[in-house]
Structure formats: structure tokens, C-alpha cells
Length: 115
Length: 111
Image (cartoon, rainbow over all chains, first blue to last red; front, side, top):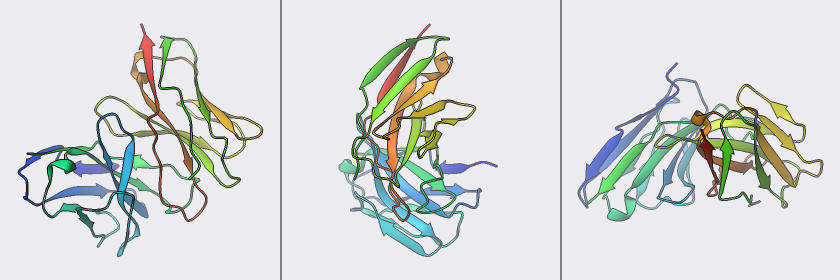
């Protein structure tokens, strides 16, 4: 049981490049989400999914796309990277979407630098 | 969204209990109180959560005030490994998908 796995752990991109951050969970969790964390700030929600085929925007969705074709995977796509997207990205999952009686499991993060 | 207020930082001696406070005066009846911690260079880690009653698990205890306007995370015997940023978060009622993180309390453990 690996929990939430994020790849890569580190990435440097040039402005305008595209890439996909991978997130996979093996806990059969219904809910998955992406957060970003900037220095000295709390985590902010980018996008989330309540099940395969269902996604929705969080508080900072601009510049990011997501899809959820399987229960296990929830990739985050940067279509045209900008320096403002330099951040640490965390993927999180939960057994039941919208049920506050369950905790979240977080991945170890992807540190992205856009130059 | 209901907000939480935590001290920016706290210090505690190793092997002593630590009480981390959180105020949430605008909490509603269906909001759960969650605590997470984030060790340096790691993702947040779930610690404990509760609704009305005090809760215990292998990591910590959660004491919730009778009016639910505040709560306290209790680490019974702090170790150096407990040095982290601790986040008190209100997980809103059923159907709300967002965890709102504040800036948390940075806990320093003194050997």
C-alpha cells in the first residue's frame, strides 16, 4: 500500500513549456485533489475530482487542466508554464468526497521551478 | 468560510506535553475540526479530527470546547520528530470539497 504517489519530485521548466504532474493512489479513494504551496503560505486548492470522469475547479485553477479517467490517477497539466507557477504541488486523496468525517492523505510533493 | 486562528509559533521541551490551541468562533454545527501537520520538505500529514467529543488516537488527542468555538491539539510527549507546522482546519459540512489551510503554528521542540 503505497498511499499517494507523485512524480516527478523535482522539475525545472522553461517559460512556455508544458508538462504533466502525475498523481496516483492505491487506496480506492473516491476524492482526489491538487494543491499548491508557495513560500510562507498555506496550501491553495487548484482542482479536485469526486470520482472518475468528474472534475471541478478550486480557488486557483487558471493555467492548469485536469482529467480523471480512472479512480487511481489524477494528473495535473500545465499547458504553458509561467514563472508564477513556480511552487510545490501536492496531490491529496480521501475515501469519501464531501464527507468531513474522513481525513486526507497527501503525497510527498513535486517541486516545480519555471525559469 | 469559517476561519481558524492559531498562534504563529510555539516552543516546547522534548518529552513534555504540548498543547496547540485553535480558535474557530464562527464554526457551524456540521463543521468537523481537522488537524494536519507538515514536517520540513514533506506533504501534510493527517493527525486527528473530531466533531463534538474529545478524540484520541496513536498520534495525539483533540480536546474540543463545549461551545466548539475552540479546540486544542495535545501531543502527550513531544519528540524532535514532532517539530512541524500544525494546521487546524474546519472541514465544512457534507458536500463541501475544500480544505482551507491557514498559515498554521510552527512548533519547535527544544532538546
